[in-house]
Image (cartoon, rainbow, N blue to C red):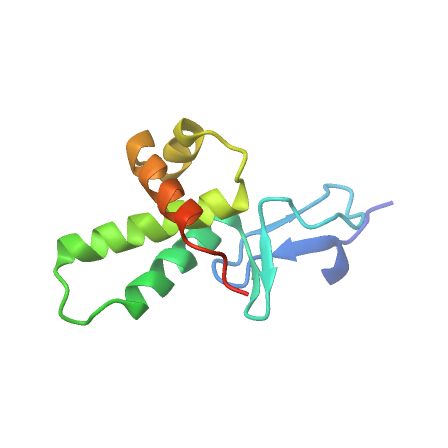
Length: 117
């Protein structure tokens, strides 16, 4: 007997439309790396991209391309540090394709800045 997946048995990223689910079509929990917000449900790759894009959107329109790269990178690192605060700097650096020192810098800034209420 073939089981046809129902919408409840698959998770679909609202940005890139990648979908995940069990091969047998049974309902599955949302993957732990995915995020769900008022804007939608997103895979990890898209969640990181959205964090970077949001930071760029709030940047000054006249900032240089180098500054935009730094802003985006810092936002992605911040997203990853908040998502997995117990992960080491090197592990986060690898997932963000940056240096451990960049992660350490962002982590230090986050520790100095109070969390928004």
